[in-house]
Length: 261
Image (cartoon, rainbow, N blue to C red; front, side):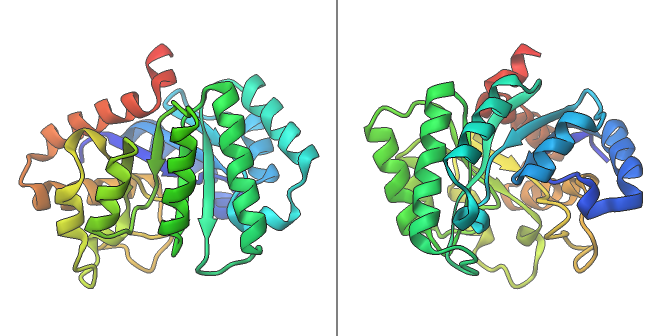
């Protein structure tokens, strides 16, 4: 397999327990970059204590599921962690989730905007979680851009339509795709991926979720991102090695702090 990048993973003990050290070693040996996304206090604290390989980078943020329980003190704590922790490259995952709506929409909207404001002040890219909330997400991001928000924006695990892609392209966003692009019932994936500009394309696992075929239904891990790369190379008719080079360049473009390491 080609050493490639996982632009969005959750490599933490709460998901892998006794297998964590094995997963981390696999990442060190088989991937060029892993973006480890900590979206609650437990995961953020683990990032500051667990020893990760040199190819790991980190995102901190509060997930929309937890919006109802996040207060101003939590946001100050997050900002301090973002400023003081080494190898932080962005703020995420943040956004809106209307599918499960574990937190009221009003709380999700407030937390989303508050975290965009933090990212703006620090100058960090943001990684967006959006599920069944594309209209509100695009409006909030459009408002942020109109108010001078300059950092990069990445829509992780993108599952929108071709029309959604067109709207987000206007905001100069990046798009990341995960295991669902390999599913047989994902009939729109080909058209959506072909619509995304090649220099705005990324891949991810979102592990431990969304395992690609041939591992669908099993616990996902960063090494499985190769199968996302393979599928997209088939859709775009680009050799795997060439596509991998493009995606690695896109990762460094999306997260400029990687270049400085």
